[in-house]
Length: 169
Image (cartoon, rainbow, N blue to C red; front, side, top):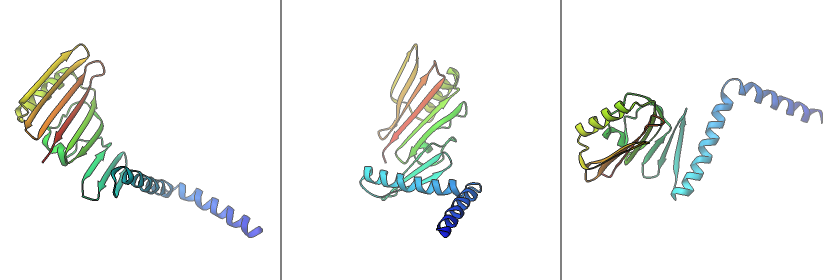
């Protein structure tokens, strides 16, 4: 009986000491990765590898397709390579893969939205253009080519912007 109590106390002390040195956070991260891999694997119908890195999560399937979500800096891989960087405002969320990129930002002035649309036009997003304006915001939809389209939505009330690019190669 005494040995069980001693082992129990030592286990609790070890757990508390590990919590102070970051091992607990790393263990929780690994557990979260494995649980997420299982869920995503079932949803995708195959194996999915999950990598948690701070606020960023990268999913990679068995065919090598990758999706990165949650970064707070402009991506330099995948579909985001087709988008000019918007250097104003603050990035709230990014989802990026080889075939799609969604960037959600805040603190964007209307003039910054307009300048970004002009930058997109200069990059060649000028085919099959649809533009609209109403009291709540503005939108711009255009194709770069038959495989690549961008849709940009500006919310004037919240001074937010959503940039969505879809491409197929």
